[in-house]
Image 1: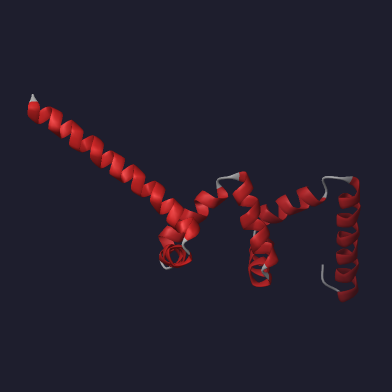
Image 2: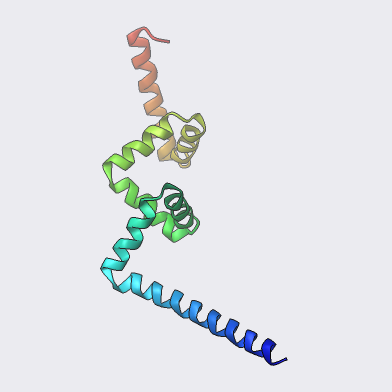
Length: 126
């Protein structure tokens, strides 16, 4: 009976230590730039870990907005994303649906399409 009590006490102490370490780690990352840099370097140096972190960032609306805005403010990232969209018919459909969601957007899309159509006819390509 005494051994069971000691085991439960040790498990509780271990759980408390792990929990307090996790709290300390979060504070350490937030407040200690060298520790934060080491953690971020560890994440970006492992593709699988970076993908997991990206998935977590994209899973939350407010963080997803920050990630996308950050990507769009970086010209190389924005060009990459737009090129990927341009090569995916489903993604192009989504962009066109979003662009044509209101009358001003619809008018703009139609103007672009008419311009493309005229350019194709002028170039002899159908």
